[in-house]
Length: 226
Image (cartoon, rainbow, N blue to C red; front, side):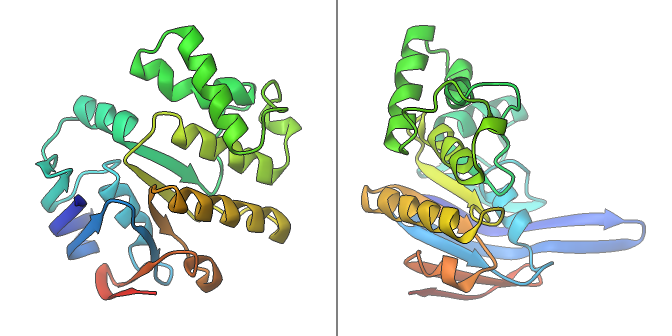
């Protein structure tokens, strides 16, 4: 089943008289349950790829399909609703609310979904238990290690049961031990059937995936199973 499809997608930025082609006529398809790593040198278009594919940014041209539906021309309100319902995000910097408990950080996406408070708390506790942090529900981010913060971020990404998880350098800010724990968690999520698209510059991290897309100058230069 085709879950995400980009067709002839480009993203250009204008700086004075210069046009920067961050993405240049990309076409690819992601199927349900795939674990895809996206690699490329700095400036290859990895970050723009993630932003456009996850509908955080609009393409300059081309079409994006999610579950067979053309979502390219959705306005920001509808794109935000779509992201909240269908997409989970895990970032290198964790992006947790600093003075908010782990439980409330995980429950935040449910607030925008309209779930009642009791259901939000129940789901958030279940997700924290799933990532091994059932004893850290009341801790703020500054009371957690880097690896624990990233697990909170993963629990938050999972809480709405999204169709796709986008991960941007998810181990980039972690020590080797914490990074290994996060790798193990992503492998487990994939085994459970989650669809994961992960941007990384580390080859050993990319080896977690089953498919590798390489970008250069905004173009796909290789797309292969690993």
